[in-house]
Length: 310
Image (cartoon, rainbow, N blue to C red; front, side, top):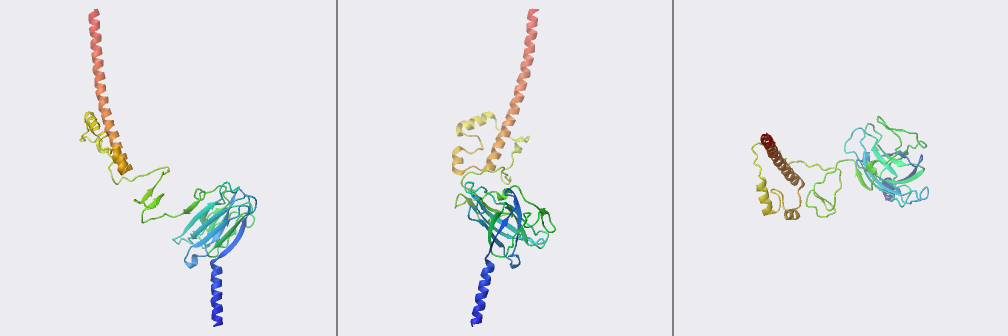
């Protein structure tokens, strides 16, 4: 009985120790460079992701006001092309007022795409900077800073990696980064807990471009068809006087009540621009005809003046 109890305790202790791997390492080199540090995917053979935490709680570690860091990585490497591989990073750097350096991580990469090394690379700031880590499986960090191990780090059957001098865009901001597409079956809300569409944002949206698939309203090039019945300007004027807005354009009250559908409104406005263009073309023809008529009349007037003088 005692042997069984001791064996159970030993298994519990070994399991606990295995599940909580902790340690620290230092990255040498220059303080303004980020050096490749590889981490092993200890959870790969157990069919689970490896969860790695990198931290610097104390802002004065290594030197006064150097900066702090909290970063969590969850990853599962490719190893010779296996699928379901990913690296998900959640980075919380120093605030600019709490350290000389706000960013300690410049990027990351799966280093096992064409080999069985089961390692990822994380580029970490040098300058004899200390990092503390904790993980659920062995990660065995290896530092390539030109001091502990030579540069570059040669990925087996892959490219060589040296230091970085700037932070990759995906690693610059606080928050989560995942290098895979995300899918949400339900509605997603930003700034609201009650999204009523696939994406509901309560607030402003800042973006470089918006692309709208035209599955709904038709692009109104049919306005230029020969058989299109174009409303006269008099008909449009009569409509505006009665309704106080353009035909086929929702009123201010309707927009305030129902919102503005960008695709529908853009197509409606495009239709009005095309109709207005047709009116301008027609008016230009009429003006040209009037101009020619005036030119003819001016010629006749000049002829009459010449006869009168003669």
